[in-house]
Amino acid sequence: MADINILVVDDESRMRKLINDFLKVKGYNILEAADGEEALNTFEEHGQKIDLILLDVMMPKLDGWSVLRQIRQTSNVPIIMLTARGEEQDELFGFELGVDEYISKPFSPKILVARVEAILKRTKVVEKEFKDYGGIVIDSDGRTVEVDSKKIDLSLREYELLKYLVDNEGIALSRDKILNNVWNYDYYGDSRTIDSHIKKIRHKLGKKGKYIHTMRGVGYKFEVDGKNE
Image (cartoon, rainbow, N blue to C red; front, top):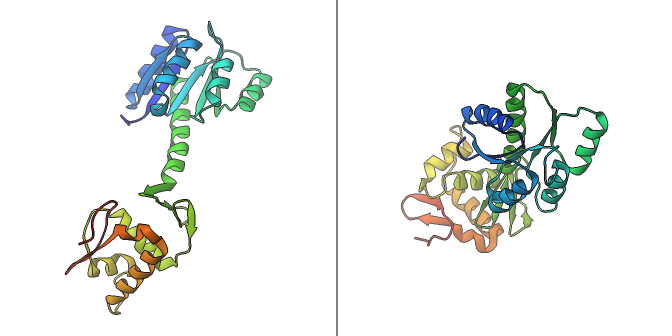
């Protein structure tokens, strides 16, 4: 998980080290901040790369609530609040401000790691639901396709064919291979049915249809910004 970056914000160095040690074992990259101002400066510098923030409430210079408010003005990065106070009112206040999880001190480091992993799993799944291929956005869960933010209507077979092509981006696929993977092995029709479906898909994709290249003597290849053979 070397591509996951977590910002740990706590004024207690021992607490930062404890959290750091447990999270690094899981392969996460850790950034640290000892107060609210340092947290905001670190987030301003590395915000686009930070996947989750562990944020203490009681800190010098700026408390956790103030940091949370400012970050939420520009980002929906997942935030777990850490606090020595376990009062219900504090938790409700945190959720109203946009906290994703709330953990009271003292806590089990193993439980903290489990909650971190659970939140990252949820947020990363959401990110992976939508994939952009040069302006063609595919929602795998919803089985929908948008071209330049406009939804296009594809039949089930057209969707499966397009999805197979983009999943193998840059690879020349023979008609037989496409038939075996999209129509399955029990299809005994003419392979030219693929050409017919490709023609329809290209038409529906508009200008983006050029991403589906005809490979003479082979089949087809999906490639963004390439040139037709």
